[in-house]
Image 1 (spheres, rainbow, N blue to C red):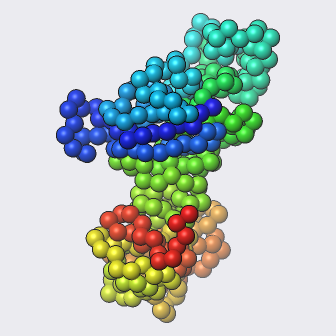
Image 2: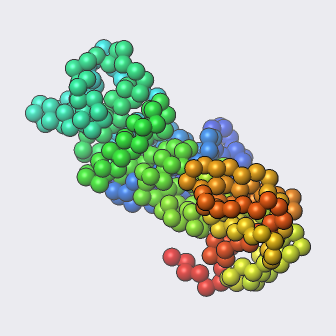
Image 3: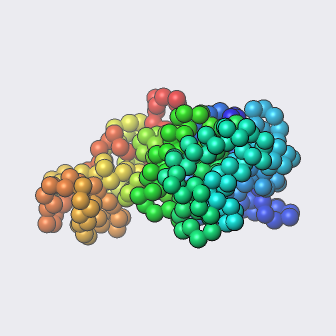
Length: 362
């Protein structure tokens, strides 16, 4: 297991980068705690896999250092970093049995035969392939082969870190849930440092202790699922986390009030006088729909019934706003107004969250 430190780390795929826009991975300075499970979350092309490959040693960063337990491994080859990595597409030895595929990393390091047998049996059971251990990998389905890859990544107990690069892409939805659960159990049992790359928020939020959200080559927030939901530090985090994501509405803000479409609303906190591109962020769970009365006038565009609740799409003076209401709620036909629960309001300046006066920095 290892504490992983990224010190002034940045990477460009260009030979002579001249500016920040030339970097696929902008400068990072982070400590990742020994023994925690992290998810790298973001859309395609945001730098997740680049960062993972730097940590594993498959890619050398353009600048900066990477340390395992304070030891500089920036120039160390992958084999010396003592990590296990599972890739998006299955990597298995077709001519070997499932048992031999799982045993390979242990035998390659001279592990005792009895331990190899016990550990392979345990991992085979964990990935649901105990009955197929003596089958050749050739001819197995893609999801079965990926389960072998996952098992081979998990079979060693002595690794510094386990790295997963979108490993459940080819797995059917039910098995995804099972394997995520088993990965969490493995983490709780052995305490490996785990880093799991995904663009799927459900995978990230159900797997990780801390979610690392990346956008345009930057880490824009690292936090627990609750922190990402309640206090998105960047508008991208608010948009990307949640279904539907956070509403972001242009506003003029002064101390305890905001003006949207010419109407003033109370914010419930003091935000000073933020400059730049100022926006109000509020999740659909904190949007209230009223039949007439006070609030911001809006028009209902459509209502989507998703079973456990309804999603109401609104046009509010040219701004699209989503609200989540109870499944049994009565939706007014027309003439509605919208209010926001002050507890769910965040203010942003140039896409970054403005902390209200007196907020605990911790």
